[in-house]
Image (cartoon, rainbow, N blue to C red; front, side, top):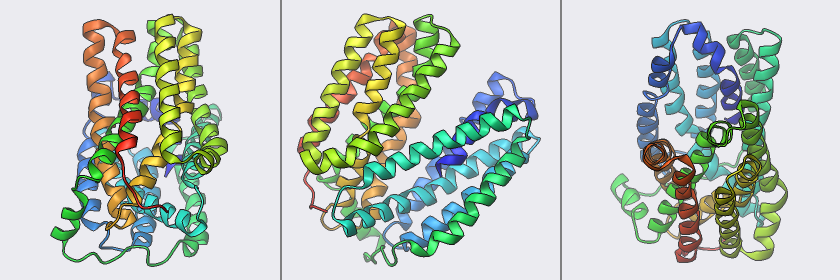
Length: 366
C-alpha cells in the first residue's frame, strides 16, 4: 500500500507535465479524489465485520496495484482525476481489513506488534520515494516505473497471501446491529483520538517544508531535508522503540508520556523560531507521535463486542476528516489571519488533547 504512495509523490512533477496541468488544475486533481475517500470509507464501514478481512485485504491490494500504473499511463487530465479517485476508493477497501489482520497477528503473538507494522508502512513510503527519485534521474517513464513496481509487489502478494490469518471476520448479525455497536460511548474518545492523530500527522506533512523553507527563510533544500528527516525519525522510532516501550510501560502511560514530550518540545521550538529549531521540532514531534497511531488501532481493535475490523473502521472514520479537511483548511485559514508559526500552535493543542483522552479509553487486553 505505501510503496506506490512514496513513488507517486516523487513522480508528481512528471505526471503533471504529462497531462499539461497548471497549479489550479493540479489542485483540483487532488481535491476531487476526496469523493473516492468518502465512497470507499462508507463501503468498507458497511462491509467490515460482514465480509472476511483476508478477502477484502487481498482484493483491495490487487486493485491498488492495478490502478496506479494506469493513472501514470494516462495522458489526459480527466483520466488522472478519475484514476486518483479510484485509487482513494480501493485503498480503503484494503487498509481497514489490513489493520484488522495486523491486530489479529498481534493477539496471536501476545505482544505489541503494531509499532513495527506502522514502521513497515513508513519504510515502504521511503523506499517508494527513493525508487521514484532514481527512476526520475534515469529518465524512466512513470508508467514503466509503476508497472514494474506493481508487478514485483503483485508477485510478493501472490506468494504470501496464503499466510494471512484465516476467518478473522466474524458474522455480526444485521447491519443495523453492527453499526449500533460501533457508535457507543467507549468508541467516542478513540474516534476523537483518531481525528486528532490524523490532524497532527497530516499537518506536519503539509506544512513542515513550507514552514522551514518559507516562513523561516531556510530555502527549499532545507525544507526537503526537514520533511525527510521527520519521516525517517517517525519510522525509526516506530520500528525500534514503540513495541518495546509499550510492553514495558503500558500503552496508556507511553502515549501520555510521548505526547506530552512531543507537545512540549514542538511548542518550545516554535517559540525559538529559527530554521534549526523548526527542523528539530518536526523531527522530535514525529518521534513522539510514533506510538499514537499503533495505540489507537490497538485500542479500537480490542473493544468488547466489536470485531477488529469494526473497531478499525471507526479509527478510519475519525482520521479522514482530521487529515483531509481540518489539517489543510484550519491551518491554512489561521495562517492567513495570524501567520503560519502561530497557526502551528494548534498542533500543540491537539497533541495535548491526545494525552488527556488516552486516559478516558477502556479496552479489553489483547
